[in-house]
Length: 69
Image 1: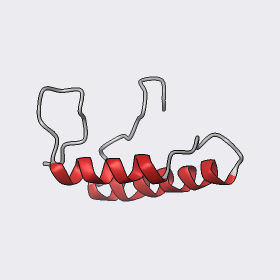
Image 2: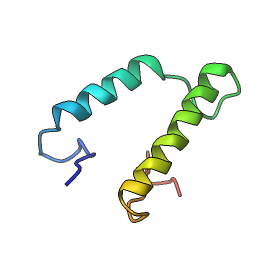
Image 3: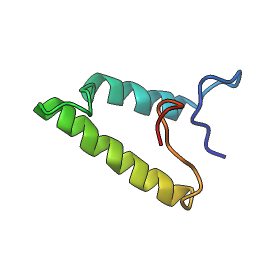
């Protein structure tokens, strides 16, 4: 099982924490913006969604907030 939610009372996997930390330090732009750092974050987000959906066989929606579709 792949755990990707830190809102629950379960400790996160160390590899997941390392990956998230690296991403937050290197790809911190706003994906909705037009500047290059934001566009880099947007490309990265789409890549993560693509590979995540492949790993979950399209059954795991990736959302950052309850209002996303």
